[in-house]
Image 1 (tube, rainbow, N blue to C red):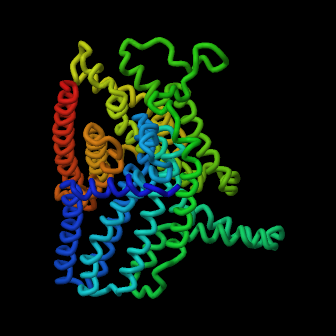
Image 2 (image 1 turned 180 degrees about the horizontal axis):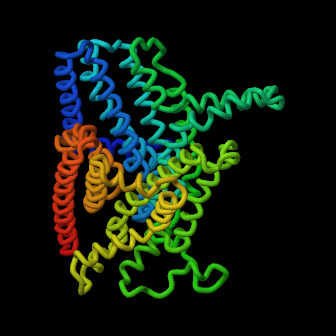
Image 3 (image 1 turned 120 degrees about the vertical axis):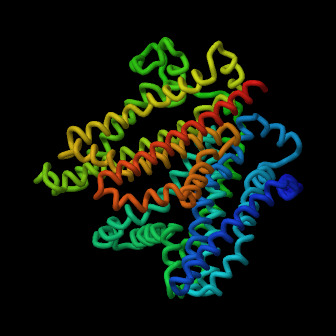
Length: 524
C-alpha cells in the first residue's frame, strides 16, 4: 500500500531545489534579516542590548510571512488539481491518495520549513548583540515550525474538502483568526464556566481543560511570552503541542476524506453562488437582464454575489450592531450616553474592516477568475479599449461594496453623535491620507500580482505592502509630521498636498503596469 508513496514528493523537492527562484527567494529573505541586523547594530549606539529588538523584528517577520504567504501557498495544493482536472491522471499513473498528499502538500511544507530553518544561524547573532538567551531562540523557532506544520495541514484539509482555491483559503484564514483570537472570546467563558454547578463533573472539567488549552494555543500569545526579557520557560509549550496534534489530525482526515471530496469533476465549472433563477420565491435576487454596461452587471452578480449577497451583507452588519448592543446590558439604561458612542465607534471599525476585506478579495479576483477560466483573451477582443473593460469591472466590484458604505453612512450621519464633524476632521488630517496612500498601493499591487501569480496574490500583496511601508521614507517622514501638523493647519495642508502627489503618482504607475500586463495577456 505504501509502495511509491514518496515518489511525487521526492520529485517535487528535487524540482524545487533546481529552480533558481527558490535560492534567490531564500537569499532575499536572509538579506532582509541582514538589513534588520544592521538597524539593530546602529541602535546599539544609542541604547543597550539591541539584540532583543533584532530578534523581535526577525521573529515577527517570519510569523507574518508564514501566516500571509502560507495561506495561498498551502491551500491550493489539491484545489488546483481539481480545477485543472488532473487528479484522475495522477491516480491513473499509479499514485495513491497518500502519495498525492505527500507530493502536493508535504513537499510544500518542507520548502517552507527550509526557508525558516535557513535563518536560524543568522538569528543566533542576536545573542551576541545582547538581550536574548539561547532558550528564547529555540523556543521561538519551535513555535514557528509547529505553526508552519499546522497551517500546512489545516490548509491541506480545506483544499481537499473545498471546491475552489479561494474557498479553501477563506476557510484556512477563518480557522487561523479563530485560533489566534480565541483568548479574547474564551476569556469570559473561562471565568464563568468554573462557577457553574453543572461543570463540577469529569466531563465538565475535561471540557474546561480543552477550552483552556485552546485559548493558550495562539502563536501571537506564545511569541509575546517568548520575546520578553527574562523568558525561562520550556521550548515546547502548549502552542507547539496543540499545533502538532491538530496538524496530525488534519492530515489523517485529509487522507480519509480524499476519495470522497477530491475526486470531483465540477471544480472546473464556475458556480452560480447565491444567484437565483427568475422563477420562485426569491426571483427578485436573480441576475435578470444585462445592464447597459454588461461588464458591470457581470462582475456585480457573478463576482460579488449580486443582490442576494448584498442583502445578506447589509443584514450581517446590522446583526453585528444588534449583538454589540445586546452584549452590553448597561446600554439599555442609557442608549444615548457615552457607552452608546463607544458601541457605534466599534461598529464603525467593524464596517471599515469588512469593506477593506471585501475590496481586497475583489481586487485579487477581478482578473484572476478570467485568467483561470481562460476567458481573458475573449474579453479583450471586444470592440472596447482595455481601460474601458478594466474600469467597468472595477465599477462592478465597487457595487458590491454598497451595503458596507450604506452602514458607514448610517453610523456617521444617524447614530454617532457629532459624526459628520468628526468625519470631516478625520478627512482633513494627514493620517487619513497616509492610510489612503497605503491602501491605494495595496489594492493596485493586489490586482497587478493577480495577473502574474496563479494563487496567493492577496497574501503576497499584504506582505510586500507591510515591508515597503516600513521602508518607505516618504510615509515615514509624513508620519513624523502628523503630530505637529495636527496643531498647525498650514503644515497639515503641506503634508496632505505631498501625500496627494504621492497618491496620484502611485495610481498612474500601477495602472500603466496593469494596462501593459493586460495587453500582454490579450496578445497571447
